[in-house]
Length: 260
Image (cartoon, rainbow, N blue to C red; front, side, top):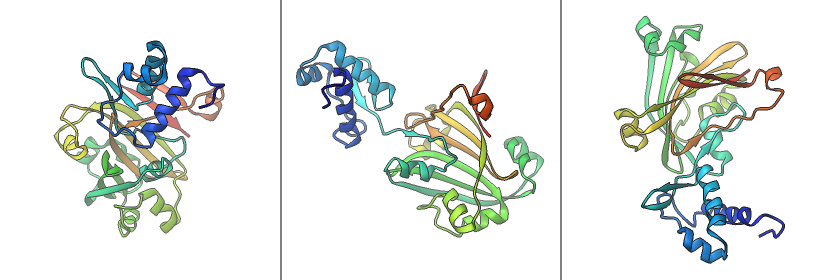
């Protein structure tokens, strides 16, 4: 360890590396504060500070009366407009998917009541792709993705279990998504989503609604339900955010991230 670094930082760094390498697996009981104090010959304050940082980063979870446990690795979105497969590959993990449904839909008043954002499409003939996306075989997101029918049909000619839709769109169809509007909110898992994500009914989930564009044309509307214990969303803000039209709009029931 680098002797120039603060002690708690060096301990945190070493423990984090151990978690990344799989020294402790998801669900494992993490060493106690006393065990870590003895190992590193440091005070309880130093150990607790390191554990606190790993908890805040999403690596560990404190359970009163039971101990500290290792959480599943978190998926954290990156700033660029990317799909789930790209995010997972960027972490050095293995993405995969299970396709649940591919269905042609007509945009009707009834459907618009259920998914109002479909009004942004210039056409009424759509294709719904419903799937469960996974990281290292663990379900992370339950996804409903709506496309113009002809484009969606071309995407579905390829293997959606091992390739991301955005990558297929770009490499096979020569179409790039250039911008997107996203709305992120919190919810709880109903029976369908809980069963798909292997979590308990009523567990917290993050809901991301995205409308993605190529030029000014709407190409995708998606509704994503993420396991809150495995997914986080980071936004970088600085004093130029207003000029760049990037920032957060805080509403009573949601946090909206605008990407222009």
